[in-house]
Image (tube, rainbow, N blue to C red; front, side, top):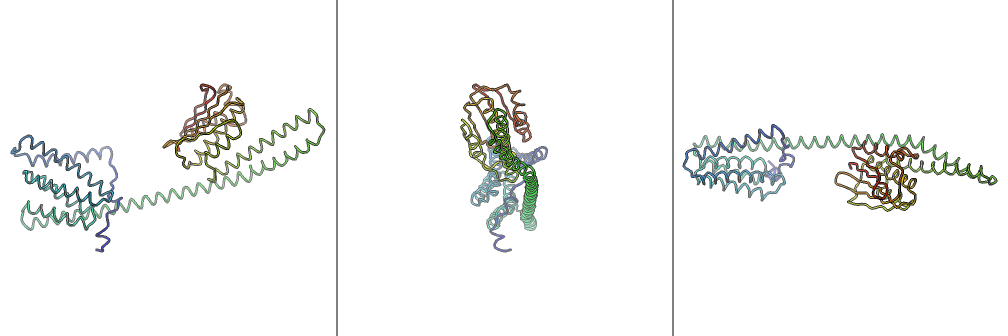
Length: 387
């Protein structure tokens, strides 16, 4: 066996067991309780102990269980000296139990320490500890050299087999985690490729179409401006200018959607500041910013855009506050204005956007919520989505 095998710890995956729940966990606790009660009964069944000695034995047993649990935690964290100290403490407790007449408890502690030391510690530390505990067991039992050799050899073999089994389970768990990560990365790459394909299709069809419309509308505006002034000419010019503005906004939104599909969006905070620069609005950000999923980021952007559009349409000149809050498992957007509004039913169907109904549907698709309605001084839109 090489030096690295003697010096190395079992892997953390090998030292970490999958938590048991339900019936299996209950059965495991029942078995351990039965073992503890059996040892206590064996130790105190002859009635030579007073009540306080029995109570002390119960306290020692409970303390040993706590120390064993702490030992398992320390070895999982690869902390050598606390682990060795806890095993030494359990060995001392076994000697004290022997002196008090509870030989069964002492033997159980020594054998348990020998097995778990081989299973969970580096071999250079486990072998001396195992030798000390098994030597104490051999001296106490005195069943004959052949029986003692077979028993101690079986304990050593059992501890080492448990170590090898734990390493095998740890390796399997690592391979499973790597496979899951590879599958997740593969799925992410496939999703990104599909989103890029959709982005190219949108760019080739919609973005080119809007760009061509802008060119033709600008040419129409220049031609109309050359005509003599008049009521009809001014009305047509106003319509053309409005159509050009709508086409420009649609092209900008299309480019944002394409950036979202490709994962190249600017941070949400920067987008909100740009959005608020077009009117009397202030933006505040609470919490530590982090990268959001494309769906959550796009939902926040669209809801903020729709809410500010509705404010400028139905409460022109009103002061607007936009608050973005990063929570541990969600992101919250609140858009609040100080002016009057139409009833919610009218807002939901007004304008060229998707309105409050569309905002609510977008939030619900992500498992979030959207609340919109009159506030103390105006209208409030509150969005919350997991992120």
